[in-house]
Length: 160
Image (tube, rainbow, N blue to C red):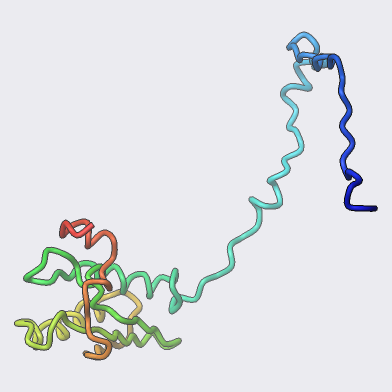
């Protein structure tokens, strides 16, 4: 094709017949027995499928979620937000033997609860059903900053 030839063909029409409208009277007749009979359920196979089992140590597992919920119950004494949403928890690891290691930081090394907060975290995590042993590692790298907070925490503090 040359550059001057059109690739489209335009057809002009005077009118188009409107599509037929659907009416209830046009529906096929069903007997009362047909109406009550169970129709084929296309979701039957989908609904019968069982979800993949989640290891208790993985996110979504019982132990992991229990630890996260326990961490959400611990509040920073100076800020009315829990330490998980505040972004002080850098990681939660659950071993296959249900040993839990929590890596956390504090807002500043000079925080007044620097000595007591890791101990409280260890006690709360140890109390979660299924946890065999808990260890808390207090880390300072990377340093905490307000960007680590969840949107809920920012909203609570009027930063959003």
